[in-house]
Length: 323
Ligand SMILES: O=C(O)CCC(=O)C(=O)O
Ligand SMILES: [Fe+2]
Picture 1 (cartoon, protein in one colour):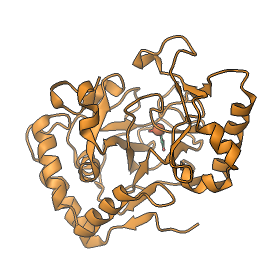
Picture 2 (tube, protein in one colour):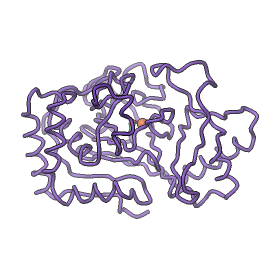
Picture 3 (cartoon, protein in one colour):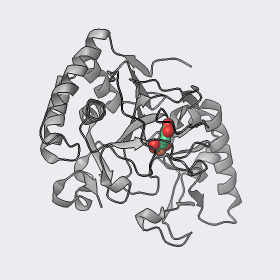
Picture 4 (tube, helix red, strand yellow):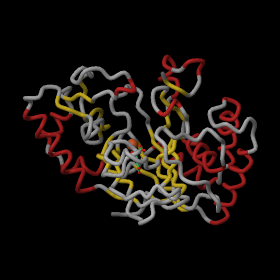
């Protein structure tokens, strides 16, 4: 596979970004979820290196075949606090790393969060949590199934950004990314047709008020253009709307097999920020072994909407948080 999903900052560009992030870290009140700080972040994102801004703009227009952009060589601090190891960990403080994540995200669109997830914080921590190893969530360390982020949600993120602050110990953790743009070529027309019908449901997690199984609305897995569709599926949470629907079951199996053959695993290094287009690509994670010694894998995550107005009815006071 080609490497045209990778964009590497030069040393000068990295230092420029470090300056912008440092200036943003000084903005009062130094809290990510504060409106004045976010206004400054949106504004200061215009000071990111021009070549990076151009690449982000191009990615927003067309996420290419991979549906992912991997920005490398962003600035990271030489000294870091221990990796948090608690469930629901978020980054409220406007550290340079949180700022860098928010700056890049705000240059793409609007950073958003959900009141019912990670307490509505805009920059969240993706860290392994003791006792949650086998959970299908970002706190786990068993393989995390390929998924569209918040596939159940009518206003799921358009993009997901993951910034690596600290890698895992053994270099085994891989962010898995699979684009439907690559997989579609392997799907026969009759399979695509079934995937394009309302024959699926995605469970709503209890934190979002999910009711008894089967109540979630029916939806298609593929929608839009027949040859370049959007995808909506979570291989852990999406079920057949009708359990007996053998054609739909077969279509899911074929889709999954196709995605498996084109999935990339990216081992994120400190200073790497992956932007996944959540409309055309799924993501997941390979298995890794946490040690809970303060040095575990640590990512900052943001969700991005490209059309903020569309979710206005769910955002109190025209803020960033959907409820
Ligand atoms: O840990 C990862 O690399 C990805 C986890 C994930 O799916 C997420 O945080 O949304
Ligand atoms: Fe995810």
